[in-house]
Image 1 (cartoon, rainbow, N blue to C red):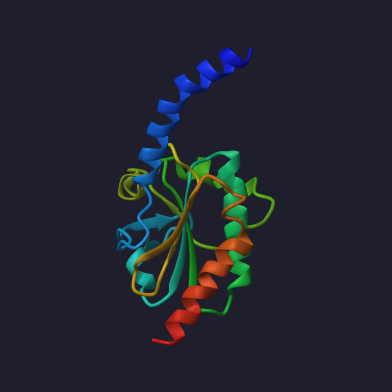
Image 2: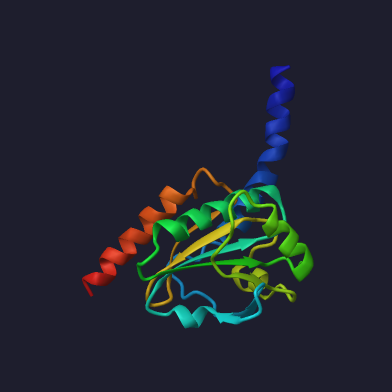
Length: 176
């Protein structure tokens, strides 16, 4: 039995390594956040550049349970940072219809009050390399540079963790 497990691990190791290499290519910490402008589910056009000078928490989501959990955490981040120079944005990066995204949002355990954007052409998926690695959360500094990112693991991207990263940037920004 041990031998079978070792053989199985040896066979799966290259596959896991390939996925990790692909995922590592998505980490854009230290790079300028790619700009985009999309329509919010409420109808207004929202562009990332609109928030220059603020810390931005950007969540890229599909319609799935992990995305609902992460989207709920972002609502808590929005509430915890209210009144500060922070913007929270959610993007349905998988091209789902407005109707389907609306139904998804209505199933959340909290009301999502931050702008939730529709991306019918999957622009953000291409710009940020989402797709297979969702949910995806970025914290972007006041100059538009990605300073923190987590993919898919809500334990590593809970609201307290995200707010701590935001607070670091707010403190650094006040010293500039």
